[in-house]
Image (cartoon, rainbow, N blue to C red; front, side, top):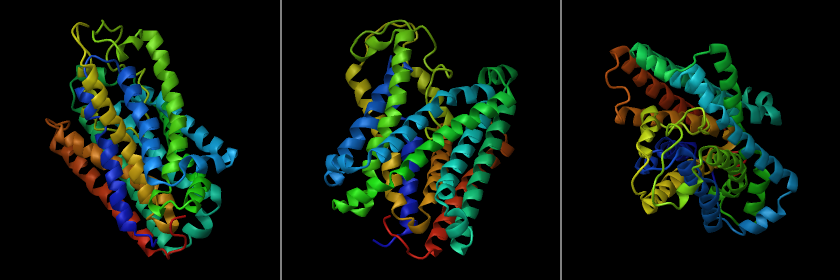
Length: 395
């Protein structure tokens, strides 16, 4: 199959749309704590969807995984666990730096490390990428994406400065720049481990191709292993929260009980820099819980909405693996395309949910500039990939 970078760009945009939108169904869940709806949705994200689509669209999935070297499976799983650890400190990043600056710094690290480390480790950066015109164009697109993330941070900071003093204190509980940068660095690098896991899964892709799987679907078996690692971290954290907050009963109980803490305590929430919905969409999730702890729980619909959110989340990487097959020689740039697409659609959701209403013209101009720069970065990267000779389609 001949790579088509601009078709790959569309796939990555679809993945960004899924990532920026997955929180929407969670807003309709009622009277469940964060750990309950997150783990329920996550079971669909990290276990059910990867296996269901992997079995449906690839050949001999169980056999492929059995034939994969243990070292490959271990590394892919390990990077999935590390990606999950990135979420343990993501909430603290928001606490110390605020939503906007914290998100920008964490996303910046995730985009930079997730894009550049794999080709550096393989020794391809200085031999196959930097010396070529196509590689230079792709790297320029990566820099443009980083600039777009920085502008997004500026827009958020500008918005925060326009808040009342009371609102500022509520949005940044304990501002500490040095501590926040350290935490954001850890969170961002750990979140980038998802990219490392995808890269270490190349032997799995080769095996599934040998079993007759279509080139477009070769990345799906890797997601089965990688997301199992992410599930491990998330499962342990959510179970600990269930014990701490006595919320484990919620999965089966038709009646709500009073909560021991706020519905979305940012210090307890495990989400990574790749789970970056619009700020307003995430903030409105506080409606999930019953304020007085009484009343019936719509169990069936809670499961339906959690399943919808979880499957939508999975589709970001479903389309990612499809897009990666179209990028040809410089498939490493897929990670930047993914991060840029997440930012584009989360920003659009923020506009749709009126996150920026009431802000100054300067702030709104920065939001518009964010979208323009990020969209430009994806087009530049797609163009750079189209300039590269077709060296290893599908590999």
